[in-house]
Length: 124
Image (tube, rainbow, N blue to C red; front, side, top):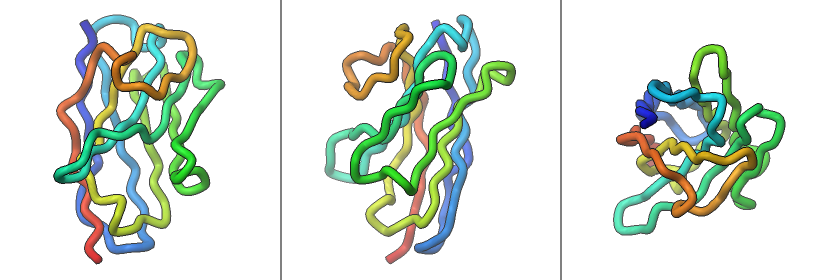
């Protein structure tokens, strides 16, 4: 089992930045590839970004490249998502997830463990 707890969400004005964190506990964090997903009201959960177990490979949703950066600190068992130039359409609940894989993954079905989510609000 891997337990995941997101933090860092909140309300930010358009054009601002936030850094989300995901603290992991349980099984060895460094053995899992990690991902961020988001879900807006009335919409399906969508892929945001993923990172492999070492942090050396990353993968992003095309629409978010250049604004969002995923990273991890295996010594701290923590995953991060730096979000810059935020827009109202980025308003969502953001979830971190863990997959028993060595490569970054984009499909929800490939992730075994999920956090409870953290809300990000960007007023229009």
